[in-house]
Length: 293
Image (cartoon, rainbow, N blue to C red):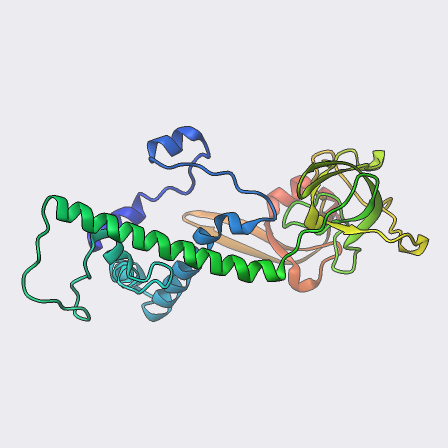
């Protein structure tokens, strides 16, 4: 098992192309997820959180050789009780408890053949499916209490949320004190139960005019509530242009037999602690004025 884990880590791809051909080769079915609806893939996200916590604990406990304990971590996860299915993953897959020092059974194994094996497998699948549906319904009831989708009519006016995304800002000035909503804008069309098309001005023509309901807030007629959108800076590629202000420090990193000079850059509308290390040659080519004496 340890050898297999090492081979798996060595051959692990950095990324896979997102295409139907890859899904067919992996015998996987691709499902489309909807923006602003993380619950469409919540099961995977929850599993990733558990695995991340386990990997972190393993790395802290065995800092120099954590990868040599992956097979034990895999065993611990597969032999842990899952509240959703009411059993361990090993028991759900093989129909019996895992033989481990903490779970010894009787000597020998009970062999099921023919119809008995099929019947026991079908009963286990039905039991697991029923428990998963019960758990999903319970979690849905918790989420429905906190979440309520608002409905708007054609002709209503709404404020538009312009929260920033890391690395790409659709239409917002950088900074924590910049407005979270702009508008109001008129609703032209209802695309779906929670999707609306807005009448955006020509200055926002580079922005897609269809938005999900969490990005909208109902507008109550009051001239003092109007937030101007003219100062918003938009590029045709929908990206925000960062501007460097000052070089705070210099450093040289060794990469194999090469020396790579780095500079610590302070960006506009950012604090000193948010300065980033960049390659000096790249910064000189992009921002030569930054290095002028």
